[in-house]
Image (cartoon, rainbow, N blue to C red):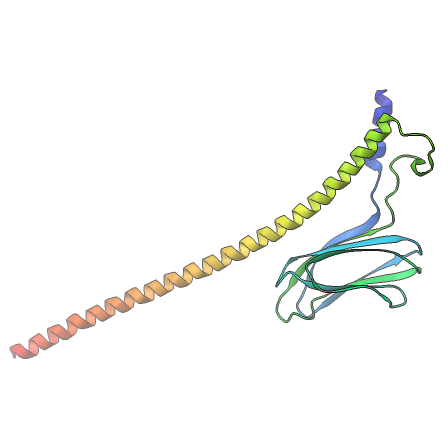
Length: 211
């Protein structure tokens, strides 16, 4: 019984998600970055993206098929998700554009998944009998792990956004504090010089009257 449970556990751990890649990259102002992926006909792909830092946290995005047909196009989006099944085989292109911005650099995260998720159990899609209790537990755990991974990704992105915003706020507060300190020093020195000039004029006037 223990060996069978271990076998199912190994199958669960080895069950992979759909193939693809995720990347976080810098997108300079007035720039465009494109990525290319060869796909077979009938293969499903999903693109999820989110702007982590920069400006108003927005970016232009579009997806084209091998014939140059635009499958998806959105302007100034903070985040979005797009799924499509390839109708023709060839190299698909998806691009992120920051050409509308002249001074704001952006940091963009995207997750590009290709293909349907493989079944975690052998011949799961062709079975005519019900799943055993152990198999049902494996499927439930696998789905829960996928949910946890997606949640961790969202939390990491949110944490990165919050950290960068906190650092920017800290820099602004520091600069403002330095500016206020310099202004107070200037005002203090000016007041001292003004009071000193009053006493100097008074002594000079008193000396002239005595003579």
